[in-house]
Amino acid sequence: MSAGSPGRKGEPLARKIILDCDPGHDDAIAMMLAWGHPDIELAAVTTVAGNQTLEKVTRNALAIARVAGITGVPFAAGAARPLVRPLETAPEIHGASGLDGPALPEPHHELDPRHAAQLIVDLVLASDPGEITIVPTGSLTNIALAVRTAPEIVDRVREVVLMGGAYGGGNWSAAAEFNIAVDPEAADIVFGAGWPVTMVGLDVTHRALATADVRDRIHALATPAARFVGDLLGFFAESYRSTQGFEAPPVHDPCAVALVLDPTLFTVRRAPVAIELSGTHTRGMTVVDLRAPAREDCRTSVATDIDADRFWDVVVDALARIAPQSARAEARA
Ligand code: PIR
Ligand code: CA
Figure: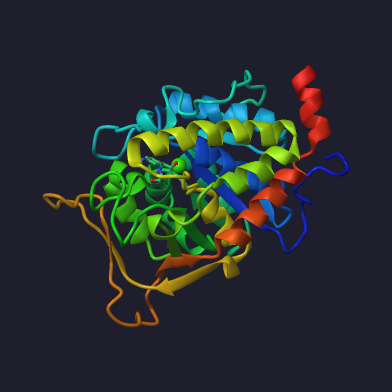
């Protein structure tokens, strides 16, 4: 890697993550946060159908890789549909491409030939116990398939820190958040696997708003990556305003990456989480039991608060580190 490029690979304190995503405006920013922040080593990016079809979100992931100058990281496509239910997508939020707003460059990065679930299994089994953290920011189909393919990964993964769910009301239905609602059966497998799972849900992500001030700070970076994020946030702000009445758009997925790199940005509480698989009005709901302190052996936790100001400092700082030189060379190529 060139001097000044992000990642400081091999640094012992950097946490190694696999980002499993469905880009997606906020997934794109999660990927850039993971790439740009020195305390995260991006071990792989895997894609899953959700915000758009698998074909579209995979193409988007590769376009983001080009904009951010991501090299030396395997990208693999995974499940084209949920385990049981038909696929639902969210074009009213993310547009027809899944990443409407900026011009999307033609991808340069080659896809790994493996299925995402197989790449996850291979990487986890080749790693030391506790080395890899899985960060899902889409529906949990690939992660559930990986668990079923090789259950021995469960004891080897450090933890799963996912964006999804909500205990205070959904966004896809009154009760359910999109990522869980798209594939509740997969979520049931992942939450119940026995590894530590931290749910970063709408309860906190709806406080991570890209305000005018945040957008000004990103604009001021004036790099190609920051301009791309600025265009993403322009589209995302408008779709959140027109469809959900938000004054500023919540930027969900980078919250999960941020929790991995600095847990002090969040308040996290251990609590049992059950996935509603068959409710009349509640299918895909994350039923979080906050009645009393959880038992010591409870392996699931939920984020209950976020320091949004410091979160944005971290995101803006990571975007600033995405090497403008190499991105400009890319843009000229
Ligand atoms: C966001 C998403 C889907 C639908 C809406 N309405 C808003 C995507 C985001 O990418 C995020 O991962 C999660 N799903 C938030 O529900
Ligand atoms: Ca997502």
